[in-house]
Length: 272
Image (cartoon, rainbow, N blue to C red):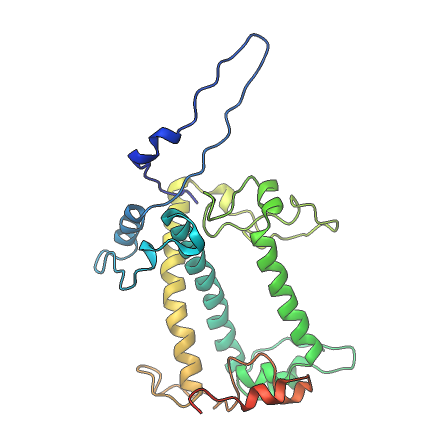
């Protein structure tokens, strides 16, 4: 994905100086980080949805989070939107499949607990609660590893990338195999089938725009589904039959997990 950039005149004084080449010595200048600006966001917004354009009801773009520059903050926000959109797309599809009883046909534990048993627990929320505690730890641990790997400076450098707050491309995920993981990984998380390498820059830009729009819609969609499953009125979902969920979506563990402090945490109610 190609990042758009505007080089601010105020940064001209920090531009790299062309090195002097001596005979027999080859000097290569270091790549200069490319940071997106608010002007880039406005241009991107017009491409994503010309009818709405650039809409920024919050001052986030104008802030300098954690003492970083405004451009670094924009990089953080762009990364956050792309990542949340991808998670929401996976969650929306998964919710629809699980709500319709779609599941793997084999066992999910060595003790013989099958995915059919998990599916029979009810809707997607109830199915998560029905998972064994160790399975939840495995899933959460894998998610934590992916988060750590995506932020790891060494892993990014091995893939020829920079951190998204240091001029890297928001949404890019470093390679597992190039990062030095001892065991070969057959499929990468990002572009597992190598389709990106066959696309032109124009096709990549169009694909990214579609991903952003789909991710935004998926975020609205998944929140609509979980709200409807909690008995809330959601326009457009009134006629959709969803199993009611009496648990807590924001609680990764339930009382059945028999873990310290979980029972007390579940008793906590906002506003109580």
